[in-house]
Image (cartoon, rainbow, N blue to C red; front, side, top):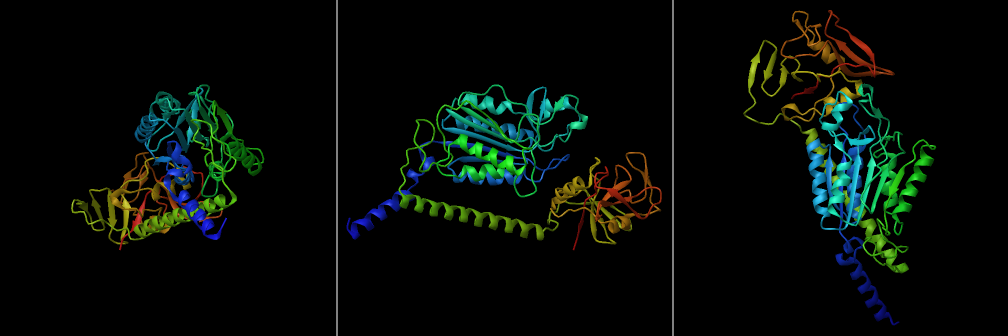
Length: 447
């Protein structure tokens, strides 16, 4: 072949790779619903929102049309599952991914939404989302292939108050034909949330999903091998499958087509593979840069958080030191600290108290935090007395209502955490176990 002919060939090859019609996902519709729940009032989790965000980005790079829900309520989750079912009626491959708390009651699996109160196991049936709803919507849609991924076997945060709940999730005995269901750990076992950005299971899964030409069964087998090594056999993922064709998250040189599986015939030459790998690296770099830009904007917004100039916020009463507003905030004019008008109303451990304050948004502010012992001591006033909800006397302004007389502070020292008692005339702070149950009163600094 002459040099000019070779140049024309390379140009046509590059154009064919750039055109959207020739991308692997373009041959068949791919639709995914991704949900990650972290900010539970009881048992908050570190990674599920990160897992959902990163999994959604990975699936988009693999050609999926993604519905992403973070920290979703029960209504949000059920509406999104119905939307997934409606979209799957058009055909193609469906995928459901969930990261967060999940429990099994009498052999049925339930996914726990954000913002619900569950006091006993019978509440779950009415306040959580039945995992069978996902399979029912997929079955009603009648599309040829579905994938259900449950990274939901974290320990039950309500286990002590449940009579019939078991550890981990139950194995689903029936599912629509052409379905693969993956559990992040075996039946009755608990999966790790992880100390990094992602759970060990989701991190390994995203890594192997991006391997070109790896069949779906081999993807989950590779994940199982990774977790077995990482956890020394303590966490072993499980799958149940009724798939009939072959499916590749990312088709490559080893992929051959099977009608209706979303895996077209791809016969890459060495030059084609090199160009495609370079294009994928550029796409991933662009996606990371966009994520960095969004995170930087969010950090700047948090740093600049101030009271919004909303004229509807009104002063409702004041004394010589404190001013109470109708948006649930109280300003201490002596220290220029703004306090929540009431505490968490439920006892939590120290980490739960920090999470409660960080996620508190009363008054439109996003910079609430757990106070120091010194700041709590500044509220103590022996001349002011009222009875808290638990019947104990507290000594501080009645503008701030406490459920009981012990509040968490942000101070820590080794294995103990700071607290402060507003009853009994104790001005000094207590040193409490991190697992002690006390209350959280959010505070923020004004300028």
